[in-house]
Image 1: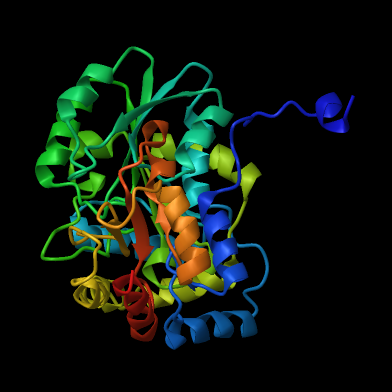
Image 2: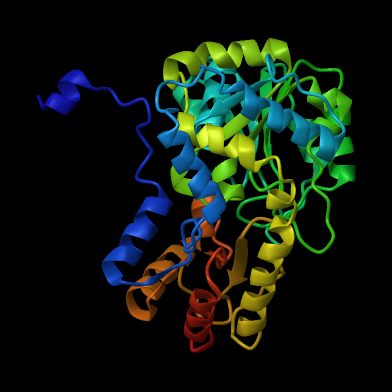
Length: 385
């Protein structure tokens, strides 16, 4: 009997290495332009980096308080008040986390037990389903329309059962770039209003929205706010994904349960970074200008590939763009992504890995959070295919 069989019975038997690790690893091996994993290839604001350095020099190098330093929680509360005219108590309703993925994990760990059903929309961020499974829950997947990624709320309503414990939304949506409308949120509010169903609203790209669209945070809708955990990411917002700092918002009763898990999972988050972020948030333009910044990059990227054989609908949010390659090859999206990386030296993410039953719609996801030089080099490659 092998040690594996003797001592370990896997709780995630069907889970393999994340596609992000696979494609980024291959990009590194092949010296390819990496438009796969969602991170910028440019630096964070030097002012923010100096603020972190100053915090270290000034001795903020020991454990931060378990829920996060109060000044940062207060700054987040002020931001929510300013943007969404909604009040979160920084003492009891805001917790700083080691990135948004940890926040998502902790929400599920604190609320989902064996037999609970959780509705998610596919294509979905790949951390949702295994985390639900890890705590004995059952994922009920709703496949979005691959043409426009709109949600059919009647289908959602039909899937609600007495076992439904939670519903997870992501807006702006990774990987499609679709933004949920006010009407979408009102329909969701109507479906959940007279239930005990929780909502996990993944809003990590809240500031990266284009073409005059507005972010419809769950915090804006009273019957949603009272049942919602909102997760967010400073790494996505301020170009420093490697710092792994995010936060979670929830009503006091829900946050109490969140913190019970958080204190034994992470306990506290990088102290000097929190000090720096608290100061940096005092200037709202540091996040209010983000949409315009990334829209310029989206527009540049799309203008450069408009004459290629790829088809696309411009992303409405996030820093991802989907490209359909049906006019190029009949290969699977996974095989085509691998071949592009090895032969053309450009890495992307195949969307089928995020779809129900690995539905292949001949679509790849490209990250445009890159320098203009990188985007031009990538576009030259794509236009030559």
